[in-house]
Length: 307
Image (cartoon, rainbow, N blue to C red; front, side, top):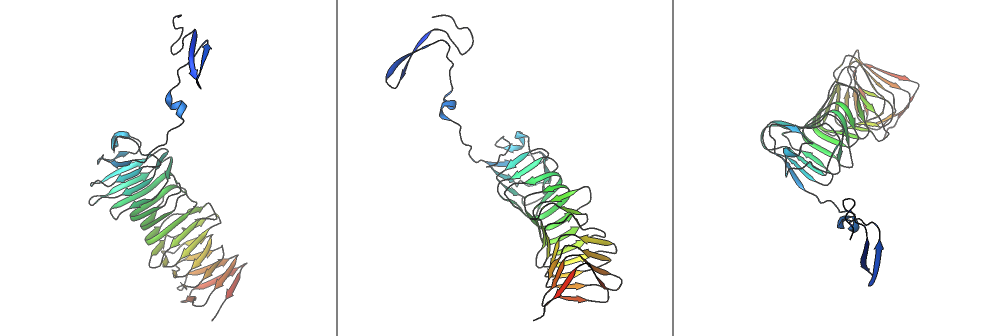
């Protein structure tokens, strides 16, 4: 038989048994792996725990046990006690995430890239979830019983939280639901990017709106069922539909420009103004406007419904 002329190939005639018949193959042949003949393999879910209590980057395998970076089907545990930060700075994925231990503060910080949640992310009362850049996306939902902080970046996966701060620092783009179940300090403008955008203040929850802060772009809904309090005395604009079933405490000027259904109350003290611009406003049975401030209507319609 001739000597090999390159690795993995030999010249000559070869007998191969196929379908019970003996065939002769002339020329070059290459060895194929069984994996290529069998097709692609499927990935299996793995339970992966963060072990570096000094903190570090998500994409370093040595920070995890077993030593591998989590993938889209994996169950992730960031629950070891201590005070540390796990940083996502590039494109990463996770199946489900459990965030928070029994002592210390465990922080998950998205600072860059696309962080894709295939399933749920649940943070306990000791956890902190921060978005300082990048994009949170995926089919999953983040439910946070600890602190939530958003200074820069995009949110495309729903978040609900018990203690939130919308901080200054850069552009914030919202494509989905942001639900406050506790307290929310709204200190910077949120850019609504979709008709699916919802900023919700649940029953019993409180939003404090900083002076001159509001929303940009149209589309979506701001829904208040709790206490929505301006810290005044500046002018704030909400450009989405504004539905109020709770209490809005106006300080300075609140301009609403996207229509709305109102079943709750607006408290407008002397020197403050509620401005309804454009759109159609439906004040339903049980709604109220109180105190001695001013209500302005410009290029819109108000409908009052009584029992």
